[in-house]
Figure 1 (cartoon, rainbow, N blue to C red):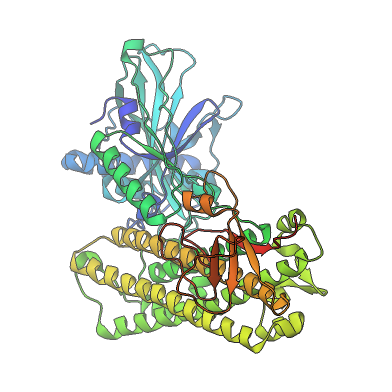
Figure 2: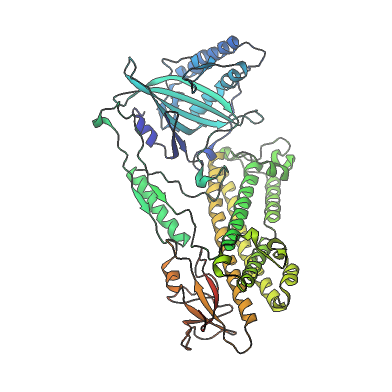
Amino acid sequence: MFEDWDMLIKSHQYSRKEFKNGVWRYYYDKNNNFLRMTRCKSTPLKINASMSASAIVSAAGDYIQNVWLADWKAHPDLAICKELKGKTISFESISYKHLSTSGKHSNGHSKVRDVPNLIDHVRYLPLAKELLENNGVHTQSRYEEFSAPKKDGSIGLVYQTVSGLAPKGDKNNYVQVTVSQKKYADGKLSNTVYISVVGTKDIKKSLLNKSKDSDDFSARLVVDTKTVPTAKNNIPHKRRAVNKSIRFEFENITQTNKYEKMEKAVRCLSKALRVPIGIEKSEKRGEGFVFKAQEDLTTKWDKFFDDYTKSVYEFVTSYFGLPKAESATVKKAISDDVLTHKGKVLYECESGKPIKKADWDKFVKNLEKFMNKNLKDSEKKIILNSTALSKVLNRMLQYNTFDAVKQLPLMDLNYNDKSFDWISDSVKNMQNAFGNSFSRQEQARIEIMQQSAGLKITNIDNKMRSDIQTILVDGVKNHKSKSDVAQMLFDKMTGDNRDFKRLADTEMQNAFNNGFVREEVYNTPEGEKTYFQRVEVIDDNTCPFCRRMNGKIALWSDKPLSSQNADDGIADFVIWEGKEWSGEKDDVCTGAFHPWCRGAWLRYYPNEE
């Protein structure tokens, strides 16, 4: 049992904290906590609006004393809340005031609950008991400091909230139970003084990456290396807990696998030292973009794969009734008979009971159909978008300054009174917009790039489909809980989403640079050499190799050569179509040098400034 408030707070890795209305509130990582939520199985008390307020309070008191506490007195182990790190919940001095009266408001006064509000607090008491015993997750902690110490020496109240999903079909989505204890000047806590239970449509979750989406697969790492606050002036200095922070900053890490290895090492160190370590990662993933429109296009496809991965996750969790809020889009995509299979529960991983072959085959077929439908033609659109963007920007550079073109957002791009969206929609539209320069040879290049990108995307998609099936089957094999299975699916699919976006980023960069280079080669008079200069955005995210390449000159060759070395006194290298980056020192290619590389080859004229 934790007797110290600071130790209790630090026993849970919170992801965000805020000081509001004189109270510190701590919120916990949704990826670790909120996705572990399971649906409450207990039946709410039969309370209705026709009852008087006093009758409702009486029914609540009867349940607490004669059912809840009687059960815990007979079975003391039930009062040990595992979600609060083995904390024993005690109601020795329980107060019933909260049942009929709400807490303090901004005016400092309490408010008598009306009947609807009272119902929302009383009917969920059996669910609160279930949540504290074995089925809830810790979602919030807060500390309210008294304006002056009380007669018994207490200086404030510590609140701990455990939450769960409301029963299916309930008007509320969540049920929360809050237990509180008095805190004393020596740092110790009293027994529980009261509980508060409420049903609610939503609960305030920690938001990663400033996203309101409760399942943000692109969410970046949580950063919180600040000291956990204590009740300041009321605790003798020698008793104050100190939470020392360790700060790690990773610089110039553009290769995702290297970052992940470092992240894993730091997490292990954090666990071994029992010190919460925040890992700070730049908000900007990869290197800077030369053109604003290029960044906008990448952002657009990042969102596409975020949405796709989320929709697949929701499909699987909804299909098997795993602890996940169901999306209206997904419910529409799955027929009722598939979801419930005529009222039968398909997936009971805790029992180890396998899914019937017919049900499993039906799921696999529906999963494949759902994934294919949502990912259809993405590789074609990625290449069309990137190629069209390179050609539109190339033409704009012929009549505008480089500084003006590089600032243009994607939504403002147009050519010959045609919008970018229209131009990039099909090969036919691109041919119409660009004329003779968009030759049959160019169309063939686009087709082969689409085939290549399609194979790579399919490989990741097949891997994700295989991972989903393996996790579901192993969940039954190892008697995992549904919340554990949901968490494993989320973790695995977060990695798959990262693979999708890394692949799309590289394919777009390659198609963009190749399109830019081919356009300039086409416009070069016969017999004249075509030179390009490498342009990189130099900032803290630029890798050492790209820093070295910035400003380098390359000469174009219409055919592959045995060496990339140039000997004309102008160029540093020779590049040609299909030249790949070997990873060796000073080796170059027409596209990306590495994952998240965003440099560009722009036309260079040796005799002009």
